[in-house]
Length: 313
Ligand SMILES: Nc1ncnc2c1ncn2[C@@H]1O[C@H](COP(=O)(O)OP(=O)(O)OP(=O)(O)O)[C@@H](O)[C@H]1O
Ligand SMILES: [Mg+2]
Image (cartoon, rainbow, N blue to C red; front, side, top):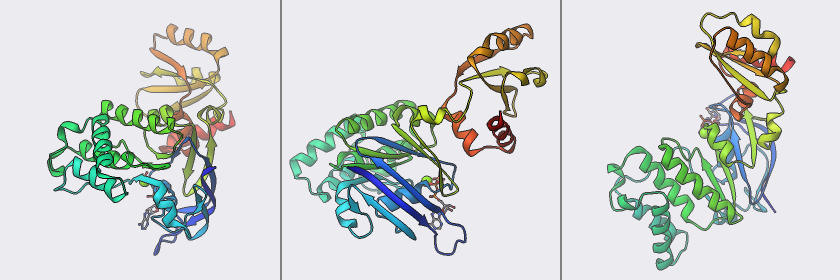
């Protein structure tokens, strides 16, 4: 069964001339992690909220777990769970109150609710803070309360809209591990994130949205092929002449003192020898999702130009 099936979904917010989503069609298999990537304002949260029955599309059809998300919103709501992008816990309530009460609202018996609350608070390292009012907790701990609430319930599809924002590296990994466990149980996830390492670690499939349109989708491996070269070389540039490296591939000047060259394995030996001869430090690594994202969506103006020339290469 498909977790999500969107067909021609568009959204125009009242009073805005621009559409937030334009004719988005995509399907998400169940039991997998799909990640939406896109620049600020691309339309990710709008899409998530439409799928999660919080927002009506202006046009199009949307099915979630086999139900019509517009006409059968009640049925969909019972099967999903969400970490909203800008959710905030209630100031006076503790982590325990938030999760336990939420589980009871979702119909869990008291004993089960207690067990599940304890388990998720421990997994996310919130147990020691379980009785402290949210207003006395740090920003990251507040964010983890929202993640704990969403992940404690027994849902089939989890929407995570930038779930690890503001979390320290250890906490992020705790959330990642909970997400992976969730998937192991055969459940589905729609994630949005601006952290490319998070997307690389978790995603089975990526969907890139730009200006309300889907501009690329596929596995990370498939998306990597949108850049013809397979390696990148970062060279520390201190008044060096970038011209001498032009023949090796596409060059991206990031504005600081490094240049990035997308190139092929066959060119690596000659390129690095030249760098050594010129006494330049360099690193060689595979093309990452970050490179793919910047090349498809563009960044600062000079990167856009580089991305455009790289597509021609
Ligand atoms: N409630 C709203 N009313 C009017 N316009 C909105 C509303 N919510 C979002 N928009 C507009 O819709 C577009 C898409 O916004 P959305 O929040 O979906 O982007 P996003 O991809 O989630 O961005 P971010 O990465 O910053 O979270 C933007 O132009 C935004 O200004
Ligand atoms: Mg958003």
